[in-house]
Length: 166
Image (cartoon, rainbow, N blue to C red):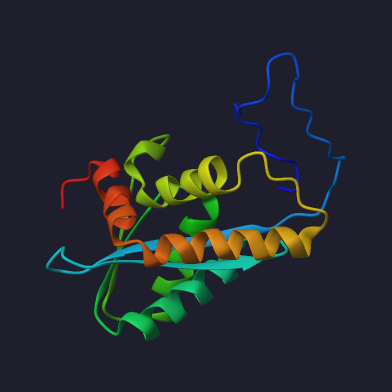
């Protein structure tokens, strides 16, 4: 994730912009949710950034914190990523109440509102951004996602872009 996402940009004629970066193995992984109220009038964004790959235990912990924050029954709609399937099994084994799971079709990121959130962060806010280290990237990712969380129209666009029948 420390490699920049190259996007088209403006430059004076004859001056090709150059983006200098180096091959880095550091990474950030982000787990997140777009939360829609039962009346479909309020939309929220929740996320967690970590410096290791997201695993099933991380997804379970994220949902535990989300349940504490929302304090209502949850319907979790997520893709068929192995981590999500494993987390769902662990939650079923623990017997959590007031939580249901729905699976998106395989290979259908256009139906996932969280994918729109990631896409906006990567291709709008962080496009052509070259961090010096993982701490700088962490700050930029938090700034981007916090900005999205405050923009009601943008959050609604994530839901509308997904074209899910709710």
